[in-house]
Image: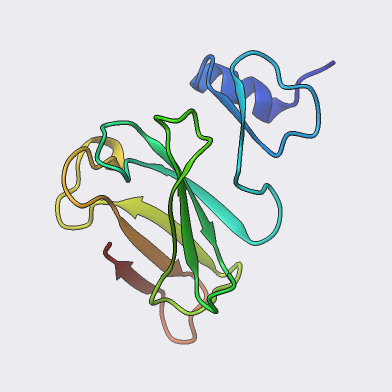
Length: 140
């Protein structure tokens, strides 16, 4: 089977660490399924959420059942199989005009990964606000 350009890039950037959310085909060595869905209004980030110095996979659901933007984190220590956080936020439901980053806002660390402390903040950016770009910072 011929690889897509994104699969070739993923192998180059993260050798042996390919992820497949709800994989629809055979999962090759190094590919791991996660409990996060691959469709819908989700955005994904890598961040250290649990305080165990292991990078976790964070799924941001733009319009969840809580009538807000939701954050769902899967533990990297579990091989990306166990939820460690599933919560609504103070931010209303969002659409494709919004983008998200997981960073330590008050104390940025190497590559945006927070290795100690209460975990990263969710930064939500509305690129298409009526008057100007909006930035919302939500702390854990």
